[in-house]
Image (cartoon, rainbow, N blue to C red; front, side, top):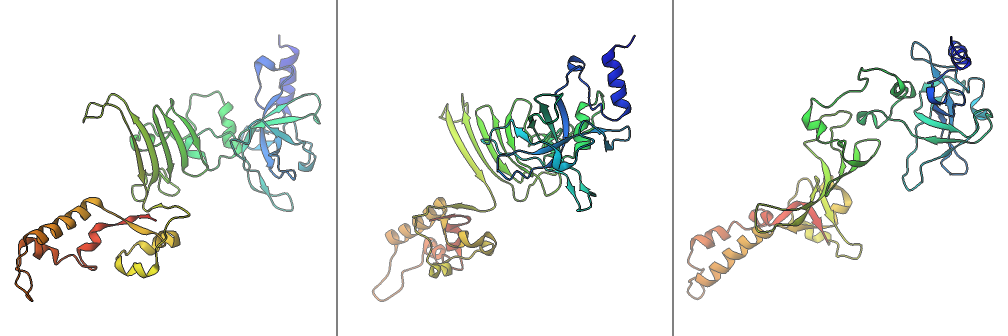
Length: 331
């Protein structure tokens, strides 16, 4: 025979007020999934207003514990996430007439006193159930995390090695932004990335990725160093500068031929191109060999040798441009 709690749950279900039940705490439930209705906190303390709702059989939002409350009457929910980790859920957007423009995200709301709707509430979220939905996941989709089903409702990357390799793995610790920017902490390695994927897709960005990778190598079996560290910085344009460094006099711009420099912006244009060391050594080697081996008579050019003929190609419009980097700028 059904107990009183089962009867109460059945009545709530018929009135679209049941939400997701918890068998271990069915008599005094105080944790609910809630739809974020407002993140506007005039005190700037990261409080939000979230409506405890439920989904009907068609997946539409209706009813719930806060079904009879206007948005303005919802009590503020206090954050359980310290501001050391800054994150805000996205609220539901409505027109002036109350028409819903876009659905808000889902958070978990904890009620301090479930029997008193005016008692303090606390929130954790937003609830994002897929690494591919970090930009936004609506309440009606995120709430499916509570469904008891063996079907996968989120897109999987397990069959796409290139994509899966760019995402945090089960053993990693990561801080992920809304739109394709993250910090991944792996064993003895840190990866800071922006733009791993092409815009609005899960296709790897093989044109202009930007990342910093710091790695400690232990027990290295290649080369003389058994233990060493390595920092790799990858980007279309790298600017390394000091606020008190020597910025470029624009008269020096005539010595550089770089068709892409304008695209890199004002900062890159105010910096000097970095020198490519091996190319510089190649030029100095030619100059030294010519100086040491040249033969000439007074008032006559030196007698040509292979090194001097090669040196002729080093002009501003020629091979002098090989000595400088087109993408690394310094001051």
